[in-house]
Image (cartoon, rainbow, N blue to C red; front, side, top):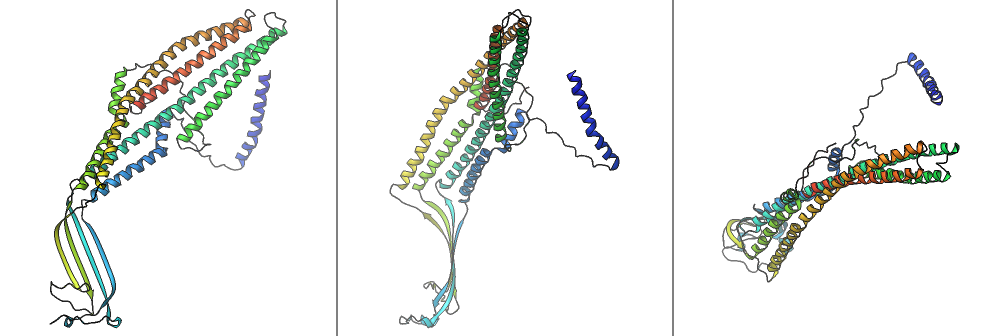
Length: 468
């Protein structure tokens, strides 16, 4: 009867709101409402792609790559000529050829009234020919530094992918837990209604204490429900932040469930070999050693001179000074000189170059120690994630059978209680076992997916399409 009344009230409300609308339609046509295309739910792969696109960390690493590229361009530019130009404009004393010809006048005092203006331009150009490795080794070091930063960008991308896997699977776990608690709450509500009915009928199989136990158990279930809701909201907030979305932006994810992917796990040696071949950190160390070795050679090159081809051009002009065409004389205010020469520039110091070489060699040795550490600990990390994966898979298979049997136990206990054949205590014990086993089952699946993501990270595995 209640359902019928609700239906009647709903139809009456619908007619009451539709009547004026239909009358308005008869009076004036309305513009068609815009068609909005619903945004499809985001899958794990969608979240990964959006996170990689919005990640500020990748922008930081890309800036490091650009800076390393500019250093390479700078090192390459030292192969080309370098020119230095100086221009002057200022006063100069007036002078004529008669002051020097036929004899040099050595008794001509300076006077402010005998000043004129001059302008000059001096240019030197240096073309390096051979620097004993100063240029080539710095170019080599800059080239390997670019590869180090590129590999670091790949490592950063892997870390972002791993974080998205953690957030997304955490969201799925929270939803599974929420569904489990809602299922338990529904069973408890039905059991309490039945207990109250039996108590009202004066049944001996139930008493007030059973109602108190059911209410207490329902309160615990409500507590876990709130925790599951909080976990879901936190996971959604973390995904929004990771994808660069506003805090209050709507986010709808896919309807995946936490399930075990029934695939055969390769042996540990396969993952170890992948890590040795693909791990970005190992590639960074290898390229870093090449860069450091080149910097050591570049520092040692300072022991030797630079061989270059030099050019000189000097010009000066003053309208109150006559030019003297004699190579013996060089008038600083009226001349035109140019020349080319082969030269060597050698900077000698007492200990500075040796200290720089020792410093670069120390950095190289430090990286050697880092390589030893990586060669030892990366396989250990891979083995840990592999064992986590195997343990999570076996635990999920074990707890699955346990929670299925616990569910049968709970169904039987509730049925016996409904027929007045069993105590309420059986319901509590069965529900407690069922909820615990099912929660452990989902946690094992969550651990399985996280361990798989960690293995992908540890072996630099490309992003795999998420299997539903």
